[in-house]
Image (cartoon, rainbow, N blue to C red; front, side):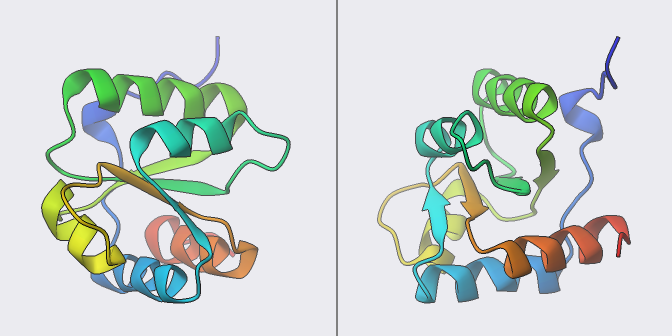
Length: 117
């Protein structure tokens, strides 16, 4: 069986990694919203990492982590709520998930969070 990581045990993205999401949003190289992130994960060009808001519902968290696990995408949590994440990304309302589409930004988030090179 694959690595069965419980949603509660997702690593938390450090502040520097979260700031990179804002940079990705300003450069328009990000997918925002749980539904769009899931669609991007199942596409031909999946993201490297998906960032999930701290107040995402259990259902949303399970959907995202299951898709990430089955498609080899890393999932991380952030201290930011959905409203704070939306504000960082320049969106209205609440954004429960985001995934950078730029490979170098995504790789840097992974490196900062997981210590990978």
